[in-house]
Image 1: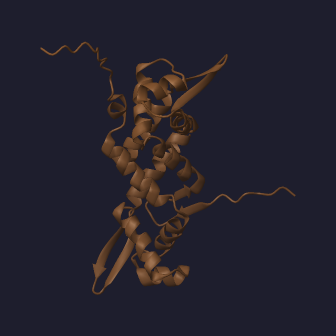
Image 2: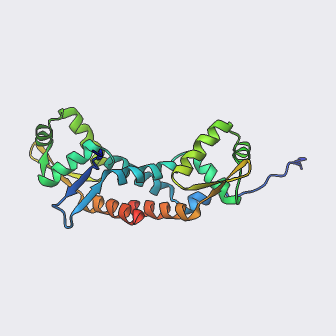
Amino acid sequence: MSGNSKKTKIVNVSMLADVVHENHLDVASVHLRALAHTLRLQIIEYIDKNPETSVNNIYNSLGLEQSITSQHLRVLRNSDLVQSKREGKQILYSLNYKKIGRLNDAIKSFLC
Amino acid sequence: MAKQQKIEVYQLKEGREDITIIFPELRKMLLLTRALEHELRKKMVNLLATQKKMTVTEVYIKLKVEQSVASQHLAVLRRSAVVLAERDGKNIFYSLNSAQLEKIAAFISQVAE
């Protein structure tokens, strides 16, 4: 046996992991980051008023560059706040009201 | 004339229910979530969970980081109320605010599920 005289104290290092699931933290953060952005919220508002709209409609109406619009739509799609479907050559965007609503409800119930 | 700050509100009306998104609330929740999204801060929470209260000195020695680094991250946890600070004479003692941590945990699982 080695002369390991150093007493190592075992502490509960997983306390936080017990309370906050690591995956959940990542998912919640991705959702919040995606939504907490004024330009993306403007895009969301536009899609709400114009369901099943195209990237062209969005950037023309909001006066944005196509590349910037596409980039933000990608963030919104990756976080599942916006859904897309292909129709012929076009990709049409609509809101995932369930996801956005759930996030917003969670915020309201935290802050109330 | 008092300067009024405009609060950004976004209204979604075409879903099953109207959704009113208030930007400052989103920012607040983002800051709270971000407070826990950091390896050192996670270690701090875990460390404080094992002790009733600690000084910044005890924290930085235990976690083997510089005092300025420990202070900076304790401040982030304080701002999100995950950690409470109380002055006792010359010392400031830090402790875990379990109630707030559980509230944030509930929020996170509600969003993620």
